[in-house]
Image (cartoon, rainbow, N blue to C red; front, side, top):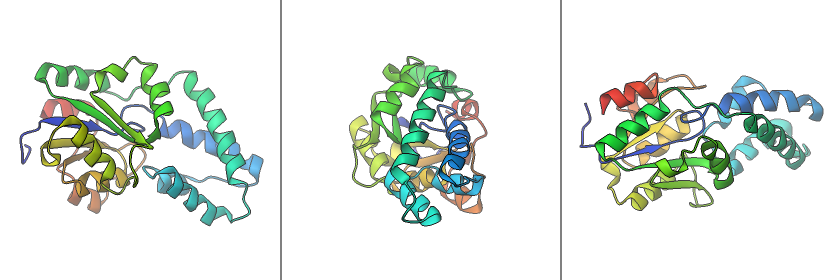
Amino acid sequence: MWPHRVEAVIFDMDGLLVDTERVLFEVMVEIGPRFGVEVDLALFQSLIGLPIQTSTAVMVERYGADFPMRDFLSAVGERGRAANEAGVVLKDGVLEILDHLDALGLPCAVCTSSAHGTVQRNLGGHNLLGRFNTIVARGDYERGKPHPDPFLLAADRLGVAPIACLALEDSHNGVRAAHAAGMMTVMVPDMLEVTDEMRTLTHRIAQTLHEVRDAL
């Protein structure tokens, strides 16, 4: 199944562990008219998996240099936090795969473009923070996804060679980053379709984390 023995598993967070991408899209659609813009699905999909600086640049290019980006992001963040505080939904199979990794004795990590505070809120609410050996988040690395830096840092913290790490991602940029890090990569699609490029860069396309668990 795998070209190398799996010695660790590295998880993305948004869209893979927690169903936050859809919530964020709905919030941006809701907030956009207050600032005279519309956020369509294609634009939102182009932002998935990007570090905040890059995603902001994409929106500035779309809406113009005079767009009040700071105020827009502040409003989105406030509304998004309120929505998530009402209850962040775990993706299907999260608890089961974490239990399976515990049974196998395999270490695992979170590798995300989100900030540590966001990780604390989203995973802490489900008492999942202690299930991971390390968490790599925005601010821990210089270059975000699609660069390999976040995944390489996660592997280094786990003490496992990248080639022996299984990386699980839902975004195109995340898959690109994990592949560039030399990891065995699985895409579990959320809001992005599986493309020919993704099939080339991954070892497997799984519809749920249950499928990944069964393959381990």
